[in-house]
Length: 127
Image 1: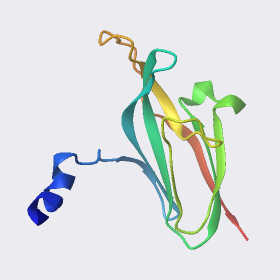
Image 2 (image 1 turned 180 degrees about the vertical axis):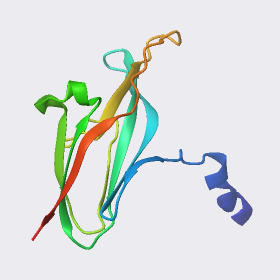
Image 3 (image 1 turned 60 degrees about the vertical axis):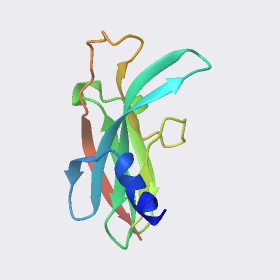
Image 4 (image 1 turned 120 degrees about the horizontal axis):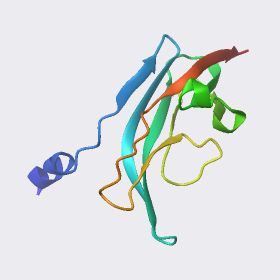
């Protein structure tokens, strides 16, 4: 029985995050996931973003989703991270929506894929 409990994490390992940006204050990484909306009959792939505060200071984090040419207020993400706090995106709607559209998954033939890209990453210490 104990052997089975020790084996469970290896049967379904968590998907590894890819570190996209790191400095002395924050680390931004992402994973790819499929988000099914069964109620509406759609399925999309997203990049789920994880932001980690590496300091004992409160930080305001700002960045824009996507390419710099698409930089609009609609694509701006801004939020507060408490000391050593980690915020992560998920498939559900959140006030701070830490996810980036990758592609529609209606059929496996979908060839249009958005590349993971953030721009104008900025952190500000709050005193």
